[in-house]
Amino acid sequence: MFARSRRHALIGCTVLLSAGVLAAQTTQVPPPKVDSPPSRDLVAARVNGQAIPELAVYRGLLRVAPQRRDQARKEVLNYLIDNMIVDQYLLQLKIQVDVKEVEEHILKVKKEAADEKKDFKKLLEDLVINEDELRTELTAALRWDKFVLRQGTDKVLQDFFKKNLEMFNGSQMHARHILMPVTDGKKEETAVKLSVIKKKIEDEVAQALAKLPASADAITREKERAKALEIAFAEAAVRNSTCPSNKAGGDLEFFKRVGDMVEPFAQAAFALKPYQMSDPVATEFGYHLILAVEYKAGKDVKFEDNKVKAFVQEVYGERLREAVLVAYKSKSKIELVERKK
Image 1 (cartoon, rainbow, N blue to C red):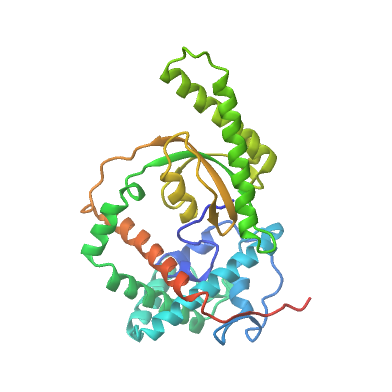
Image 2 (spheres, helix red, strand yellow):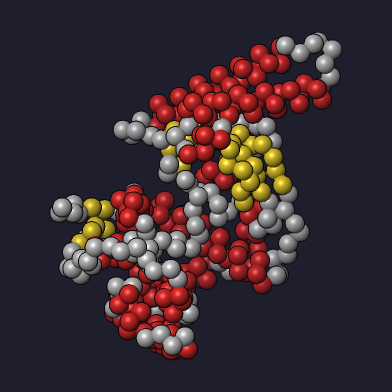
């Protein structure tokens, strides 16, 4: 439910950045049918006065199943809003993209489309985007790439790699969780509810341990504590969690440090030791109580490996984007335009 794809494949425009991706679109399963494209003049939202066209949202929904579109529309629009905030920030920094760079990317995509015996104009029509709009998207993406390269020097990336080794060496965590969404902005009340649940779980574990004979050794007591804790937590998840994982007692199985879960959740989970519970953890989905179950250490990796370095740069870019949004989204004027039925 709260996994996050690093490449945001839901959004149509940004996947056009790499040559070959555009041509590959037509080799995929045909997208679900959607209503006719909206007018290019129709506005979905404004960010600091700058319009996000409804057509951009429409593009993001092209490959979404009909039953998911209402929920997905919010995700697409929020992502487009975030993109615009980031790009406005970069424009303030006067980060320029040469027109020649954009045209080189356009030509590269056209060439790969031709190599695949695809008609470039037809591909654009299928994606409901024209060349001017494609150039705008490419310009914004290339501007972001320049910013990441400027900020992420080799020294910065090496330091980031050393301080966050678990992100890159394949470490995994097996955890359970209890999710409570925030309703009516009542964050503190939601956190308190989870804290009460945590206390009840701890009390159940204490009761289970109290039944052990006084002669039980430390190993026996620890095994019983872990068993009682997982049982109590799973039962609490079934009763209280709103995540679909509640049916499995909140079991999320193994997940990686990055790419599988939203960052606040992953960071909190990996900070735990096996059979340790977190305090309430806030994410965009609400508040979570997390129980670490098992940790798998990663392998030895070197920053000098080109694949590793590229991954470090990708993750660093994500964290940089998050930092920009934390600093500027709350200061931005965001207006959602109500759609006419």
